[in-house]
Length: 234
Ligand code: ADP
Ligand code: MG
Ligand code: MG
Image (cartoon, rainbow, N blue to C red; front, side, top):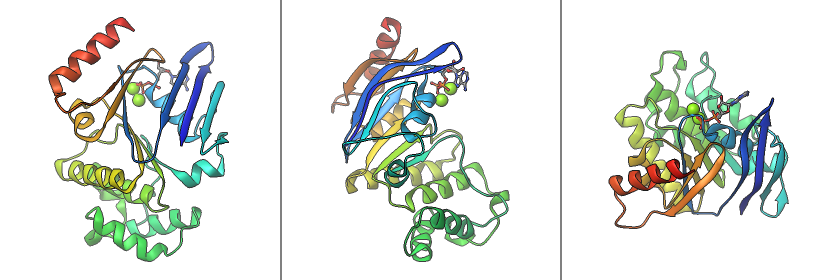
């Protein structure tokens, strides 16, 4: 349903992405891994519509997508380094604000259910400025899920989280996968990649240099060995 064709991104005189092609179907879980500076976050921003690629096409359900396209907004939920949350507002108020922005129906009811799901229902009316990183991220996940996206894009979502928040995040990713949501996970955490994804691609110096299915007998060691080889070659 989502197809990226030959995405190139040049910023200034620097080519950050070179002809990156990738597809993601409903119910599929794909990991993008690669060294720091490989272009993963730039790739993420291009695919969720925060950046316009210099060339190449993004096709979502047979339609060509441009930056800030309403179709992107409707179908793709994304969680990057910025949480888009308001510190002076409570979880309920944050979700209400965001729900209105996205024209979500039954905001209050859905918010209550989501806050319970991410374990924030006891804190739902407290301004979030005193929240821990884990609590913030749990609310950020609830926010992303509120408009019921069909694809979920996550850029290093586990970074800095406590165990409880990791548990919440992973159970939601797994639940969404079963529901038929397509998941794209950018991560440097190989354990999470093995745990959550069925397919892995390696991005190195702005190019996809390797791709594999996560087979049953793949473990941390074999994944790491495969990755090291891909990065050395690329
Ligand atoms: P990753 O997420 O894999 O660590 P990034 O996409 O953040 O990689 O960055 C890839 C490269 O592009 C880096 O060398 C980074 O410095 C550069 N880069 C990213 N954004 C910009 C920008 N707005 N202007 C100039 N260079 C950028
Ligand atoms: Mg980086
Ligand atoms: Mg990054």
